[in-house]
Image (cartoon, rainbow, N blue to C red; front, side, top):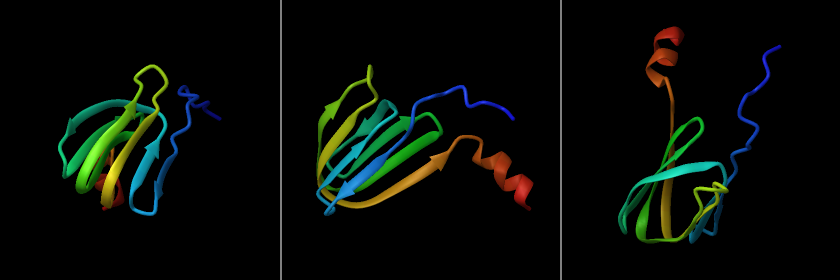
Length: 88
């Protein structure tokens, strides 16, 4: 059995479509009042909505928090093209 080299755990919580918190975030790639693009250990996360504001981001701990009107969260996995080819 292969051991996971990254011991961090990713958790994402959306509270009443008004607040989003996440752990294991490596970077904030882009942000505007309508969209925030994050990188975590397994790929990318795109948060969409309106009036989005980043409240907290710590590269050292991986903690992230934003508020606004959250309408969607989309995950993109690293090596997704390879996975899609394998599943065909």
